[in-house]
Image (cartoon, rainbow, N blue to C red; front, side):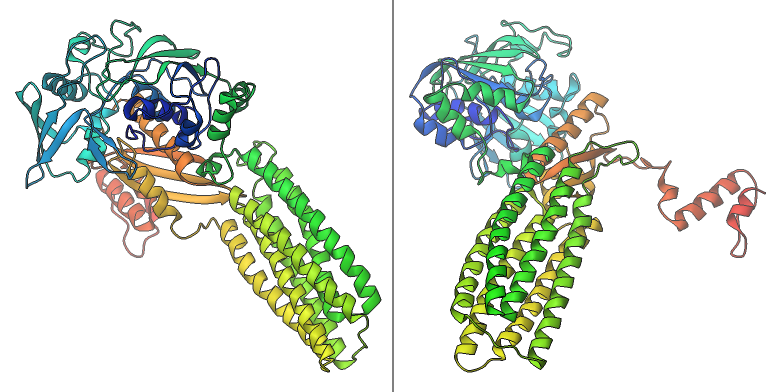
Length: 623
């Protein structure tokens, strides 16, 4: 199989592209269609198993506008770089375990010090125009990226100090310092350029598309480019890793996901199987890239379904309470009724969170979900207090319990109904990231356990211990208080801009793996309703152009949207790496001590006395 070049997950095209490259390099089945459109990010291999062994054409949908697909002019990492790399190869590729393996190179060996790499190229690789790929092409590519037009791969090659061509297929790379990630972040990342084509291109941004210059060594050749509309790739029959099974790939830009998926699902047979494989499923990590509107809609649906289930259970128990007079069953019933009362505000909060932001509420209204979480906690607390009151009354003034068989049956049915609602709500809450919905599900699960406790109370009465009914009511109150504390903790944490343990570390790990990022300086994250927002400060090469820096910021943003569940928005700030005084204009705002030092230096520079320990610094600054 062809190894995976991208570090992120694809939104639309990557799965279908993976099908092509799987077939190109392993001779496996390729997903194909003579007139379909593929979209999504499900498991490509699954679709490939159902697909035909070969086909003339596959149409693939993307959402972003990618410009010209060259290593300098693509717009996004996914799908832009993925599409670009259909035409180009890197010396190494990342395998399914995340480790770099030789690709255009047949072997890569480092010396004992880890600063010199000897690269042996495969001898069967050719460019799309028939010219052989050799060591001179690799040496030219490194020099072009380092000293030519600014681009994203400049940073990846910053440690390469010299390149020596030993022979036609062998070269030596010398690094200025040891880099443990050199194979991963450089050799498996940088596309190799054909010298005989690119030595005549001074500015890739202004160079028009031409089939004569659209030359690489990859499994597909770009033969038609209409940025913003479509791209057409033809299979490379002489590809050194095996000819692709799909002969033509047509990439069409759609306005949104709905249009792309609708185009695919409008077909049948093979296209329908591709749609099933490439459309995200409940077990797929692509749940992380649901839109806020989609996740709110799922939350509202889960709340209504849970409300119906809880309502049916509570109605049945109310009838049994009236017949039997059971305090324990009354406690359980009151709790269920309280649960109904808390679900309606949650639905309102989901609806409110869907409203667009305004100039007064510029971050939107999603925090209403957290406020409703507090309301839920208050209602649960009142329910527990009422249960305690009724249980104490039953102990001091016991009432005869009748219809024990009905109470027993109602307890079993209530336990089953509550557990079903709990399972559905918790599953939906975890999928969309809603702490309030998860808490409601945990609350329903507690209801199921307390219903079982009612059953135990009935058994106690049958065994001659009539106080068991009231005692079980007190135990139910204790369980409710326990779940109240645990659920409220999460809700309050989110209202205080807290996140779960490991979240910041996970974000840092993802960001540091983005090509072009030299260091992660600061990461902050918080929840807004059931969606997460983050601020990320990263250091990049200070020599980058604004456009190249913006592209890295886009890569960081885009990768986090796909790798961190429930991430909705990321603000990325770029710092120049290895640059002293990069924040001299704002450093004195960091702390009171920094402000005092700044004032002192300012007064000294103007010839006035710096404030002493007993002076009013602000007064001295004006006199």
